[in-house]
Image (cartoon, rainbow, N blue to C red; front, side):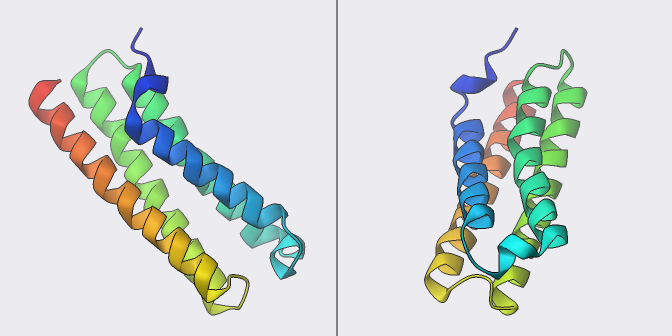
Length: 120
């Protein structure tokens, strides 16, 4: 079995998910917005989960499907981060950090997908 924990892209996705959990558990209005809080947590967990699941699949097409699900979940998460900022749940500083994390992970994930397409 492939060891997904060794993948840098999975590690970065896990770190982002932890940041999202810390944000949603901190004091402030997000703590009482159960819908958005739940969506942020779910989409953040989905990214590394799909990377892990994809990495353990036997065929390249199956792996790529799960990596693409991770990409879609990351887009969902990024949208929720932007919304959280626009409605005042995230400070400008925290928003900039999470926005940059989402962008950086998106680039890393796309590079990983391109690598897998070429090398299996």
